[in-house]
Image (cartoon, rainbow, N blue to C red; front, side):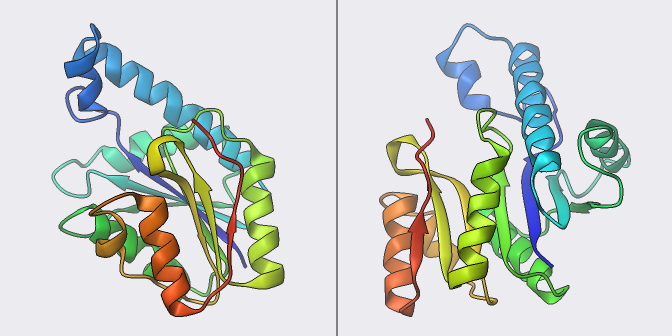
Length: 195
């Protein structure tokens, strides 16, 4: 069974895309509305992919009882109910939360596992399906590069888990990931670049 993880935050003013507040004339509420729209687009894309299971892995994990209900409402009509799983993120920092999300998916019997972020509204279902296809046929790692060396998609097969603390710190995510995969001697595949 393959799984798609949508790595997201619950839309909250002042807690999402905060750099846009500093670098644009948008208010916290404007930025939250923009993020919510991005998230809805990504959830729609996820629901149209060929994923067997779609896990919406979200923050905040603690202190907010209505986050699960809100994420379920956002996913409703966008992701088929029989495919949807909602799980709070676990971990002290971003790298730990990504690591735990992949680890939990592999532990539940999923392979391959693909993760996308919540701020790629132009991502198409066919790109996600391409990642599942190449991982299913070849194993290894599939990466979706975004502008400036970032990643919009990470796909892993066969339970391979890199040290994410080495990927999300330092130079660029893409180059760091490629180094980790080459050191592990695994094949990797680059998908189309998104801005």
